[in-house]
Image 1 (cartoon, helix red, strand yellow):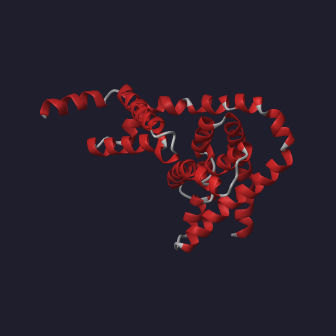
Image 2 (tube, helix red, strand yellow):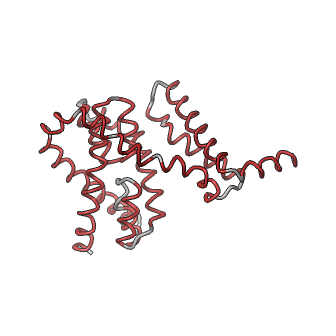
Image 3 (tube, one colour):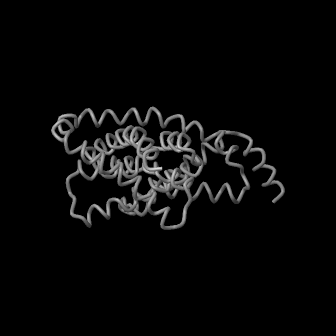
Length: 238
């Protein structure tokens, strides 16, 4: 056991170890997801997060130590987001034809996401700082944390809520859309992207290219709309 502990101490000092563990955890999640018939409940991101959190807790590894290796994956989020423009370009004609519906859906979705989060926090007895941290939960993490910081909330809490929202939206969103009888791929994708940003978009992209394109569009537009509208509404109301 002492030899194993010494080996772990040596390996944990290498940033590449945590990069390797991140990739392995996601590959395990992706394998289970495919073997389960791409069932939303077996979301690969959720499985990977659970595996990594368990490992870090068992090995008493600090997050800063883990992130020194995982930052390489974090860096690739930028290029991956830009790459969403490719399927969007292929669906550009459909986007132009749906411009009015997109604008209406965007405003309704953005406001609903923020207001419902604040109302839920109020029902649970949250304070104003909790409201600020919850309101931008449906926006991609960097933008949401910036909005929260500007409002005076807790960016760290917002980051956790953004991830939880993305995973829950990717898991439950398809079931809810099926229950409501929404079969149009553009509508499904736009709804997922508005509510659950990047994680939901990744899920939509795996299912259908049209849904993925509209989800990526919704993710970007919702980030823009929320960053412009939420501070104005917040200072007007409070």
